[in-house]
Image (cartoon, rainbow, N blue to C red; front, side, top):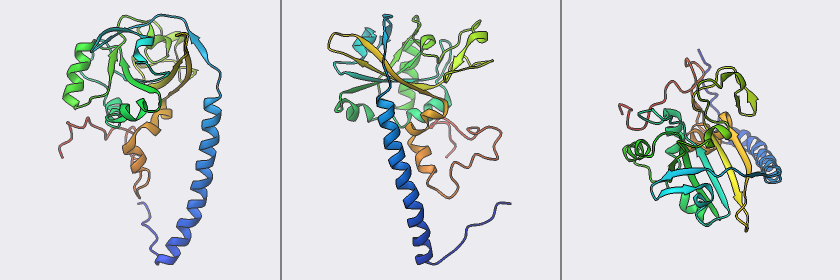
Amino acid sequence: MKPGPTIVDRQTWLKERKALLAEEKALTRSLDALAVRRRSLPWVQIEKDYIFETSGGQQTLSELFDGRSQLAIYHFMMGPDWPEGCAGCSFWADSFNGTQTHLANRDTSFVAASRAPLAAIDNYKKRMGWNFNWVSSLGSDFNMDFGVSFPEGHDQDAVYNFSPVDQPSEESEGLSVLAIDAEGQIFHTYSTFARGVDIFNAAYQILDLTPKGRDEDDLEFSTSWLRRHDDYET
């Protein structure tokens, strides 16, 4: 049985809270410094011409930038024959609506990309009530080249999250950032996978502030509690 909370008076609580605040501020400064290092990473030019199926017809990778110089792509787990998107990625995607407008005003476009056919993506997107841009990379090497899809036969040399994996899932999650210069050359500047995408999930960030936190320690696996938002009973 877990111990209950320590109950104190307001002044004692305030003293403890201010001590924690000092640690939080130090962490914030460390994260700011880490962000500077992240932005200072070297770039890798992308020379392959990827084609995507979008609601506006076929588009090249450069067209996904939509006139802006930066592009963030969420690698959404939904394979070519999946009837619905991954429940975990759907949990993350519930935080995406409305984000595009803010990013666009900072010279950044946002899309989700999956290997599912566009019709299946659109049907699932409608079901979930999302309005962010979501495109199909089916028929291209995009997902494989960015290390988030592992077709049958690639188990022996698969790499996910920058490390070899013995038995990769068919699809995995991640987020990649690209930049385009005035000459139209595209560069890969950053990618993050696995726990690296936690910061994009608003619900998790709120739960981390609560007494119970994510409350996943005693579960069979961390997200076994999770359902798509229209699958909960309440």
